[in-house]
Image 1 (cartoon, one colour):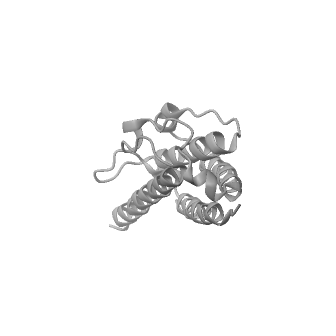
Image 2 (image 1 turned 45 degrees about the vertical axis):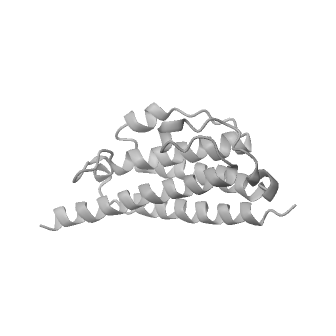
Length: 161
């Protein structure tokens, strides 16, 4: 059985989580991680915690059996989490996700994703194959990375004036 597709997902998710770490680390003033700018509803710290929890759960726990217990409410409610803790959670998510994805074979990717995806919780994806859901998770990661990147731009413009 080929693990090529699983390794491809691992490379993409790992690369994007490295970008997330770089973005979070680039905030010189940690308070900026908790500021809301423009029309944003969630600050970058919240989005980073959400992405780490999301991947730890949907990839690490569901597909990899890591035993991670997700607290989605806390991902959105916690504030003023130290930057180092956010980076630690991102690193943990990267380890769980990439090690799990590297082991997935093509046959597993063709099977139905083995857990509820929350229906409307994550874009109403409903039921689908594991490959389909992993594409969605990669898109979701990129979506929030863009939001954080835009936040950095708005924050830097605001502090430059």
